[in-house]
View 1 (cartoon, rainbow, N blue to C red):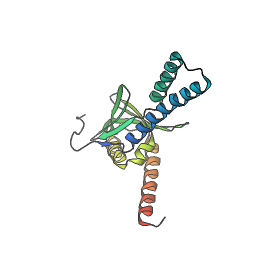
View 2: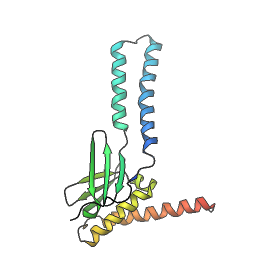
View 3: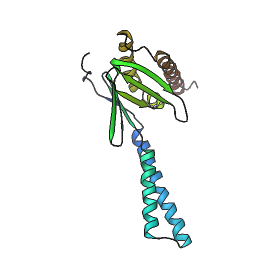
View 4: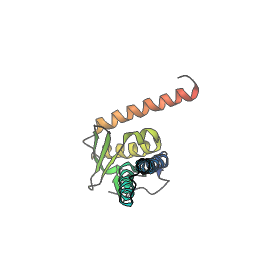
Length: 173
C-alpha cells in the first residue's frame, strides 16, 4: 500500500469558479430584492435587514459548490470547512446515488469517502482520467469489488460526451 503519486499537477474542476460566482450572485440578489420590497411597503427595519442578510448567508452556504480535484491516485472534494479525500488505487466501492441530484460515492480501503457530482467528471475529462486510472489499478489488485458496473456506465457516458464534442468541433453535429 504505497503512497499517493505526487508527480504531475492536480486536475481541477474547470467550472468551479463560475459556479461560485453564481452562488454569490444568488445570495446577493435575495436580500436586495427583499429589502426593496420592505422599502416599497414601508416596513424596513434593522432587524428585518439582519434577517434577510442571514437568510442570504444560509442560501450561499447551501449553494456553495464542492471543489473537486484529482491527482496521482487520489480524488478530493472540498466544501466550506472540510475536505474529503479517497485513494483511487485503494477503491473498494463506487456507487451511483440516484435522486434529485445524482452523486457518485467513492470509498477506499482506508475509510476515506467522497461524494461527487458525475457532471463534474463530464465537464472535466482530466478528473475522469485520474479516477479511471486509479480504479483500474484497484480492480487489478482485487480491491474494487463493488462498483464496476457504475464505472462502466460512467465510462460509456464519457465516451458518448467525448464523441459528441468531437463531432460538434468538426461541424458534423
